[in-house]
Length: 121
Image (tube, rainbow, N blue to C red):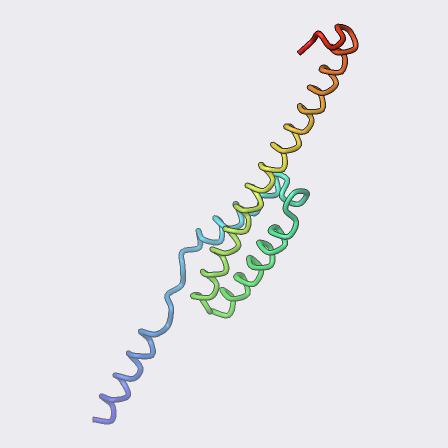
């Protein structure tokens, strides 16, 4: 009876242990961070990049300590922060291009007004 109870307890404890996640989750998060770097995340979204790197490093430590649930959660957060950095970079680049175009339009408008006077509208 005692052996039966011990084996049941061992089975229950084994069932509570989180299974090791697929290693591709590490690759996915790391690829997202690299994509964010390539998109200009360090320049346009430094806070999100720092968060992504910190969470990625913490997740790697969690994997080493076999805290798989926490590691998976942190990997997902790292990936989300990297994706946010990509989008912020795209937005900032678009805003920069729009401002440059607005400035060119103003210069052209001024040249046309100087050439044709107020008749140009």
